[in-house]
Length: 509
Image (tube, rainbow, N blue to C red):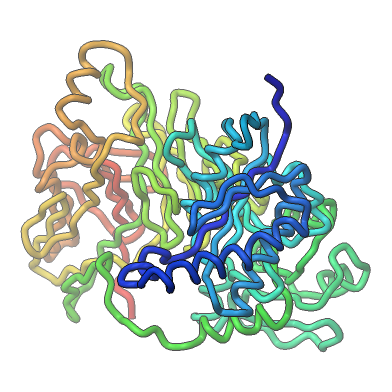
């Protein structure tokens, strides 16, 4: 039985169940017929062969990855234009067995899983499809790495960009919301730049001399703060631009204008289940700020051989997430950072999704939420600290005692209590097996409910350890010192406990 390399395409009607609930037989027949009349001609026009019609979904095979992606783009644009359906398209390329008119193989399974993960109105495809298609003919961008049901490992996914759509990367979204985006059109004079600008060059030809002249005429800015709009970009020009540490916004002018306008509109809600509100006294003279991730050394007590944490776009560290933008992996080798989405830079060098680098001390890591500093620690307790300020802070007034821990007394700063063991690589042996079965996690094992306290007295601030088994440390820029008795602290110090870093800061104005 022979196999052939094919690109497998799945299309799916959004909210199909909602449409058919309560519909009579005639309405249901019309919906299915209209769906077929819309989808099949587009697939066949691009040399695709329909294998299955499942009512709300089609499966098709293409000999050309480029044709398959073009068909997906045309389908989504047609559905958007006619407003009859909302559709999503997922695809993957690989060996396929065709038996009795049906198709089987890993590429079929992967395309189905990608389609299930794909949001409405988008076209997602696998790394193999990306490698096989003509990358100069199509507008595309990386989306991220995903764990998909039934698929071993994580899968790098890409997105085709229709002419009518543009998705703004997180740094551009934040710059628009913060009023820091400077848009420079081709032929415009260079404007005066406010502090900490994000510059978006528009209408320039990638790789052109005119683009280089404008870049050379700009004042000194962080390479990560320089972006360019483009649509269909030759791979060599794309690689040259992104390797220099710059970013791309994929989309045509009108679509990018709409996306920026939408971003500037006031949000329709102001609360979130993830929002943390702290009682900060207006008379505080010292702030405690949740400032990042502490990375315990491994192997650990014959239990943990290594572990990882994923960084979300808003700056939170979680055990594991499909929405992560970067991942840190701790092993006896050291700390390795992997990019899971575009826009990650280490010491000014762009990391493409899927690429990784072993971190050294003092490196600056640019991520969508800002800048993270990797501080390498000297000692056996921790490998290093990923340090970046967040909005979670607690003010301390004179005479107050503030606790930190997983469940601190008021006033207190709660440490993350991340559940789940997906991020842990276990040692071999009975001790690791018992820990795994008992629900061991790094966050719960290394920090107590009431871990430490910071007291502000007449002579200054003092850190006290409240836990007899989980140690607390102070990092003063030189190294870690375990808190045994009362230990003086001052602004600039970092309190390290469990997997959390807490910065001691002067209060914000």
